[in-house]
Length: 315
Ligand SMILES: Nc1ncnc2c1ncn2[C@@H]1O[C@H](COP(=O)(O)OP(=O)(O)O)[C@@H](O)[C@H]1O
Ligand SMILES: [Mg+2]
Ligand SMILES: [Zn+2]
Image (cartoon, rainbow, N blue to C red; front, side):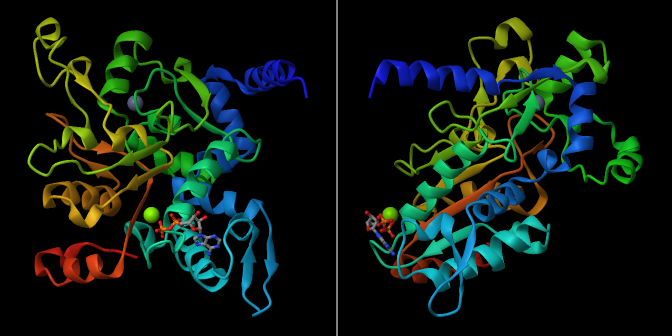
């Protein structure tokens, strides 16, 4: 094996996948393949299905995406895929729940999360799994957010695609300043999910509860530029670089969620229930992502015995 040759082939392949065009071009893509504008949940479901489905010895559906690495979990995985991912992909209410994997230590929880993350990275590099975002958006957001609210009804009828969420503050400003409001000219690019590059995949791990900053989730004011723009509510003086921002379009793993301070959970609740969260001095920020947490049974019991926590929908 000539590793250098393989590396250069790999790079050439990555290059060949790149795509950049205008919003007008993107609309043609959506017209031909509406799945590109699907939700994060539907992307995960399509990815799992694309590895194939067989029958296990007990007669359950065997999702090969998972069964190639995990044994003896067919029943639990069938439930996870069909009751959660499939229903969520159809925009049923379960998608408003945070996915909490509960099981014994070494039961495969972390493995499931890792498989989903790596799977999404690879899937976004396939034709069926292609994802597009607004070029220059710190959250690589869905380009269809560019369509004004008043026109969405007509669009949905014509294209058969539902639009959820609103343009982020950074893109609103960009649209006005760089494109003079001309939506059709806005540059769109294909995006490749990558945990390393913080595109569409994130991990949040609570540190010391006393020093933990909500900014780790929602982004923060950029003190270096605030003097230049004069206001905390100018999006140029804000860094949309929290885990929730970066994981938009894909998945965020929430480690030790049940040990986390309540204020973090409220942000998540708003995100999963309403599809948006509060960041800095802005109106709500839209985001579309799957949130996966994992825990063991004793931790879970102590969590649910705390009544204040009853609002958290955990699947
Ligand atoms: N059902 C399973 N089939 C095969 N390997 C498994 C299974 N469950 C766990 N493992 C292996 O055991 C190790 C620990 O699993 P992990 O996913 O870290 O568990 P958890 O996060 O639930 O504590 C990993 O190497 C994983 O691959
Ligand atoms: Mg684990
Ligand atoms: Zn944006």
